[in-house]
Length: 292
Image 1 (cartoon, helix red, strand yellow):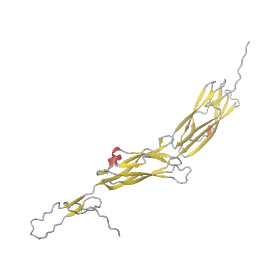
Image 2 (cartoon, rainbow, N blue to C red; image 1 turned 180 degrees about the vertical axis):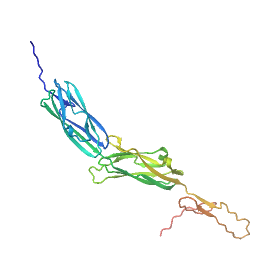
Image 3 (cartoon, rainbow, N blue to C red; image 1 turned 30 degrees about the vertical axis):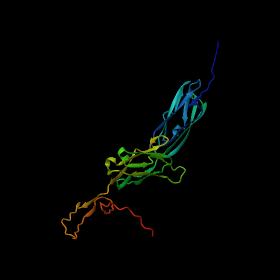
Image 4 (spheres, rainbow, N blue to C red; image 1 turned 90 degrees about the vertical axis):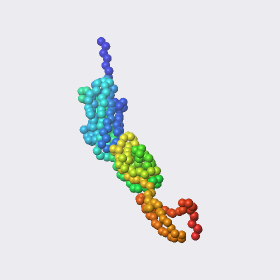
């Protein structure tokens, strides 16, 4: 009569290890994130397991299962969900108690730590630009101010239509806003917007909006829906009229003097300077003022 036996004790690993730290890293508020850990029974016995401390988890952290039984060689995935409405840092220690199927004293206790940080993004920016009226060919500069009051960096990126790009230049088109972590004050980033047109143009409703995206650099996701900055302005020529366009003195006697007048009327939006000269002789060259 041959008798054989295998001596074993309950033995479970967490992601192949005897201790585990599940770190969600930094997440934005109201973002739902799920991670999994895998328990595996590496013993020859049916093993019972239980997560101790799961009943005291903060509401931001949830487990889909907290106890169970594993057959030899079997695995069990535990899904951990994190979502927070408030900015905070979480460091929650749990214990995985492992015992036999008969419910005797735990054969071993393994540490499992859940970590996460929820943070908010607080940004301010210029909501509208008004270039008013400029001369055709003249460049006018306005500034968009971007302010990051949150703890971490936020990337920004501008976009505009092809028609708007013909008359506007934005510098820089994209970049990063420094966070307040490690600094006393929030930094203001100045974005330069230049309006210049070689023809008469009005930035109306069809051309009137710049788009700016604010992006979390680590996760590469939008922190806000795409924002729009209203732009207004127009480029016009100088305009004037001469009334009347022609002067006819009629018949004159020898050495007789006659007078006639004409008006130069500024019909545009800008101040204009004028100078009368003889068309036959041409415009006299400019002379430098004599030194005093």
